[in-house]
Amino acid sequence: MSLRLGGQIVVVASTPDVAKEIHKTNNRIFSGRFLPSVYYNVPGTMHASLVMARECNDTWKFLRAIGQNCIFSSKAIDSAAGIRTEKVTEMVEFLRANKDGKVVNIEDLVFATFTNIISNIMASRNLFDDGGESESDAKVMRFLNEEIIDKASTFGLTDVFPMLKGVDFWSKGRAMDMYRNIKSTWGDIIKERSTAKNDNSTNDLLDVLINGHGFPVDHIAILFTELLIAGTDSTTITAVWLMAELIKNQEILHQVRKEIANKAIIEGNKLNESLLSECQFFHAGIKETLRLHIPGPFAVPHRATETCIVNNYTIPKDSIVLVNGWAIQTDPNNWGEDAISFKPERFLNSIIDSRGTCFEYIPFSAGSRMCPGQNVALKGVQLVVASLVHYFDWSLPYGKDPSKLDLSDRFGTTLKKDKPLYLIPRPRENYIVG
Image (cartoon, rainbow, N blue to C red; front, side, top):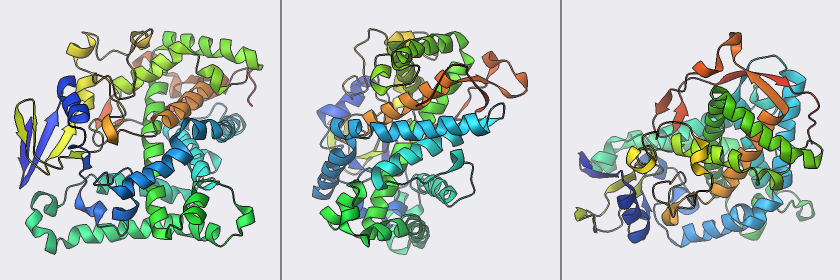
C-alpha cells in the first residue's frame, strides 16, 4: 500500500514476503531511517545518534561497535547479570516492604526497574527510587522519554512539504526545547564523571565514551537518551502485557509459576537467570506476548536511500517505508484462525525466533537496523516478570474477576495497554528473594 502526504510518499508492507524484500533482499537500500525533522534539528543528533541515525554511515558503525562491546554482546549481557539481579531484588523488596495488599501501577513499577537497570549499565547509578513513586528528578526522565517519542513521531509541515524547510521555525523551536531537556537530564551526571579522577573509573559505558573516546557532553547525552528510551519503552510495554495476559489467563499463570518454581527449587527458591532460560513454556509466553502485542507496530520508519523495485512496484528514493509488524503477526494467514488468541504453546518446539530470519515474526524488526538490544530486553523481561509471579500472588482491585480484565490497546507509535494495569500483591510464603 502506498499513500502521499503532501510531497512525501509513504509505502506500507503488510506481508512476510514483502517484509523479506525490504529487510533482507534490499536491506542496504532500506537501511536509511526517516524521522520527523524536529528530531534531527536537535544539535548533535547527526553525530551521536545510534537508534535513530539517518544513515548507516561511519558514525553509526562506530557507535554500534561501542554499544556492541559495552551492552549488546553476549559477554556484556552476562557481565550485567549482577546489575539485573540487584535491581529486580530491590523491586521485590520494595513491594514486600511497602505494597503488601495495596494497589500497584505495574507500568510505573517495571518502568522504574528497567530504567535503573539500563542507567546502571550505562552510568553506574539509579535514576529512580521508591519503585518509581517518588517525586524526584527521575520523573523528569520519564517525561523526557514520552516527549521525545511524541515529538519524534509527529510530522511537521516541512516533513510533508520539504520546500518549506527554511521557514520551519516550529520544528526548530520544538527541537531546542528537547535539546534543553536532554542536557538538563544528563549534563550534570556526565560532567561529574568527567571531573572525577581516573582511579575512580567504573569501566561502564560512560567511562568508555569519556576516557576512551573523548565524546562531548552533548553527544553522550543524546546517545544515552536514545539508549534509555530503546531499553525501557519496549521492555515496559512487553512486561505489562505479559502480566496482563497471565492475570487474565489463570491456568497459563499457574503453569508458568509451576515451571519457574521447579527451577528455583534448585537454588533454594531463589531465581537464577541461567535456570530461567530453561523455562520453555515461560519463554513461549514471552514470545507470544511479543507476537500479539508487538511494542512497535511499525518499528522505526525506514527510508529508501535510492529508487528500488519491490514486488514489481517502484519505490522512489527517499520514500518512507513502514513494515506493519502488527498486521503480519496477527494475520490468520500466517498464524491460523486463532491468531488473536494468547496461546504460548504455539511456540513450543517451534523454530520461529526473533532474530529477524522468520519474517512472519519480527517483534524486533530485521535487517541491519533491527534492534541490537533484543537479548538485553528478553533477559530483563524474563527476570522482572518471573520475579513478580514467583514471589507474589496478584489480584485485581475491588475483587474484580481476572478473566474479565480489559485488554484493549492504544494503537500508535507504540502499542500500549489502553488502561493502566493496577494489581494488588500479596507476598507468597516460603519464597525468599536474593
